[in-house]
Length: 164
Image (tube, rainbow, N blue to C red; front, side):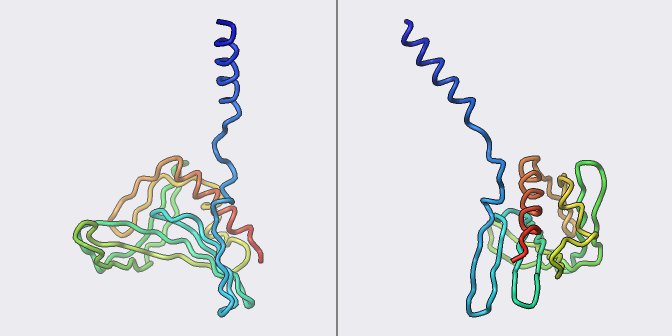
């Protein structure tokens, strides 16, 4: 009986050392293209992600937003991002590309927001500091889980910190 109690205590005690991942920067992938003299860093793919290309002449950072729907809308425009604190980030003029994927998925909608400076511009600072609650891409609403919002905010911080 004593042995069972000791083994149970050891197992339960070791579970306390298991922690959720908190260094999301480890998830960022690095791709080197020697022919183009380019290094690209990308967050894991989701319905929204971030990547940064570092070249000899500068930085290119993209926020990519995607959604799927069974109804085409080739005239879709606008991105609205709602943060958990109730504030919004908007670009109502951005064109949302629509392309047919297949009969199971339907149509893929995508919009890209970019900046070309090493530091994150004021326009995009909320992505670094706040969690996303919902994204509206054209007329498609995407609810964002707290886990995805936490990861994306971390990925933004990781990628904008890359300077070379």
